Image (cartoon, rainbow, N blue to C red; front, top):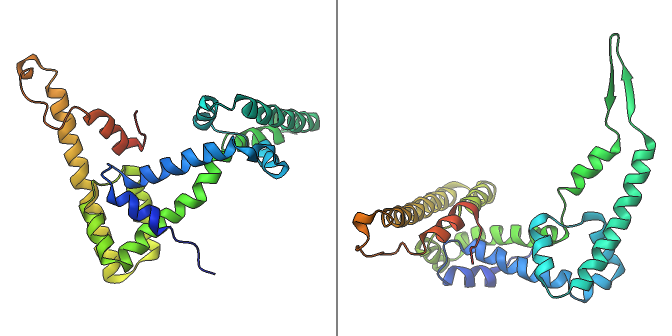
Length: 239
């Protein structure tokens, strides 16, 4: 069975002005995931089992805390803490193994270190976003390949951030071949560099405006250059 394509959100994102349409799509997914996590779903046993196991990253725990459903978050965190305490107690009771050598003994980690490392790299919200977002990346490349109108919109957009440039580049290497691959990569590179230079130049003028000698000069397009540069380089919206 073919994997699902998301042509409507991709098309909509590339029709509206944004320094990175993919960041905009990811932000929508993220907002939806936050609402889902603190909606009625947190009372469902199967969802609670997953949040107990995965927990949340620091970015998303902050967003969840800003939501109005503090009771829902408290219930999920209490349940997650119960599981974490139980798991770490069991692992630590197993003890660390000691390996003896001719002149010294070394203590090797038990399962606690691996457990904490895994916990630090899992997040229920991230996981909910990721699979759909990867299909967005694949859909962009697919639409470029199959729809001439989208190719035009793609080339006329305001570019993309560095992270999503890399993801599109990697996807194209596996999904496209021959002349189509060359065409996409050429357009992608041109789109990325041209618009990075545009925002870099706006940022340069923003910096120049802090020199008293240029105080009376117009701002041109530089007043919001800093948040746009942050989006280009980190994929983070500044509100």
